[in-house]
Length: 305
Image (cartoon, rainbow, N blue to C red; front, side, top):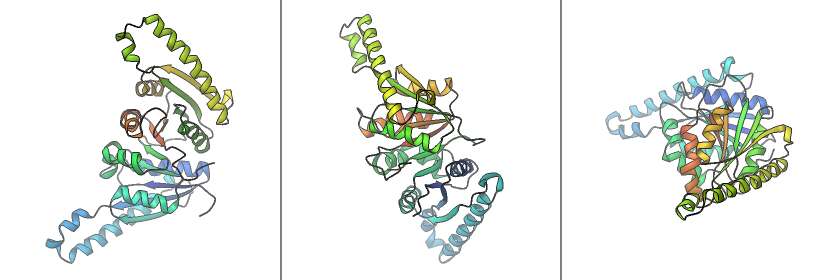
């Protein structure tokens, strides 16, 4: 392997998946990274027809493979997309998610780019249970989910932080991959057992004072976190908001007109499975902009800038 960062983008060659390839070229150009483009063919359906097709099934597979390679070459050779970068391409057959994961490991990819919508597996994989299992159980690399056509480099990036180790990692990676983007650091919180405090007879003024105290403490933690990530106060906008994290992320995305959200794979106080099923999955499914999911650095390959 070379010292350059490697980006792996997977495409099903559908129109919407083209956006993921375009964004990967953008990022590779901006970060002087190597780019590999992977197309995975699911051939299980053909295998089920083998008895009827006989040896013709092999000719059909060869034709599909040839067609995929031609379409991939046309896509990567489009000057409007490739930004002058020569990318490696590969066509493989097998289970898409397993093949993507294996290819990422083989390349030691520092970033994996996928489209949020496609003709086949990407649409279901990213926004359904398969991707949740992949991110939750086995995925150790940053995954960029592309939802929008990339007309330009990312301008404003919302990084959701919870002060876990993944938060520091997320800020550093956002700055590495997107050095010219405006950063918005958001910490949204609720008090422990907040919904039960009123039921327990705790006065509303007491709860408001607790929220104010916690907000001030968390603002200081946010400043300390940004400093630890190497950011000066002028380098970012910081927001600490009391409220449901998933709802606040959506609100700040709209308020700041963000074109990318960065979220951690899991947090400090919630089990990995639970958070992916709530905040991270909610952002993946409900946000309008692209989403970069960062794994816990303690589980990840060496991705330090």
